[in-house]
Image: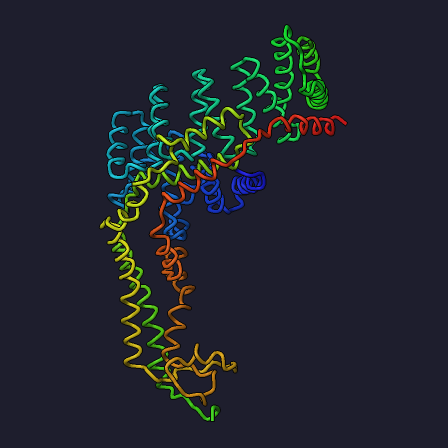
Length: 300
Length: 246
């Protein structure tokens, strides 16, 4: 996760570099450290350093890290020739390096020659079966080929060992949602909430999944998670506010016939609705009519 | 007495400077030797998995109140049931884990290499210093010091009348041994500095028994009282919204 101060720092540096203010290397270091994906900028500024022999040699041994970074960014931008050149330089410097081997595999992958990439990866995995990056690449490759069930299989195998890797859990959750396997997705989101209990996005996604699953109990749980999202975001999350309204009306419909032991706060929905109206009034007053009619249709 | 002691410039040229230079050179040599001997070890999947299980179980314990009771209970059973739970260690297995670690020749080899590259040069240089330079007063520091520093600065000289600000050659060796880290990090780059204290930390990490922490984690998980925190959140959300609307 990139924190807000880090992001503003990054943006400031990016601005500075874009306008020719120098500090390109610092920018690239920060991008690497935060693991953000700004491939176009990285490619542009990284190449400008690499093409200038004086600047390049000033980096010392960091030069090779930069080659790697630029190569990956180039593959992301489909500048395969640039990537190829970078990898060639690295190959010359570090023959037999597994890290370079990984890059070559990625280049094959970027070209779309899946079979060859698979071969490269599996030979690398033979040497070190616990290479996390390569295992993740295989998942990505399966996904890119449209082989979703293969991706799930790979991910599950990966998670069997690296079960504390929450990024992998998140990927799995999103794949399950895309396949409408909500029960499995709910499990993954629970795992994410466990590993980072204060990230509102996971609460929100979990609530969404529970709401989609339906059923009285799930709806009530979903409402609670929407409420926790509101608490964690300070009421700024529109999706959570709408979720509260939807959940309340769905719960009311389901429990219409039964005796109403409404120990849950009935106030929450009206509060959420008012907050929504206020928010819309401030930021999109022309859409206020849509909102009020939608809310009215939910009214019990 | 102490003021009368004049150090020969030859001592500076033939003891102080050579000693420092040799220490630096040996440090660099050691770095390259240890780099040569370093073998990339493939971690055992079982150990990696155990570490990850512990992290995940710890997460479960810490965040238990954030997931519904049913989910928590199923996870707890998954982790700590007595048949095939991830944290459950069969009795017989627990003991031979350590023995197995010692019998693993690769591990012993690695430790040997680390030890060799650390201890051999140190003993050699110490012997060299002792043999050639024992009893030299090699330098004088430009400020007075209290008696307590005598054992630090005048190792190898058993004279209580010499002023403490004189440094014996053996003490100079020790000062170099421990004080050159900053210089190494300048020469060899930040992380490459051969750090003895760090090495010792790594050494003590050896012999750590993962099965023990698995058992501890299991016990911790067994006694967790699950109290779902989410119902409270509804009230808190209400309070937040009330504040927002106002």
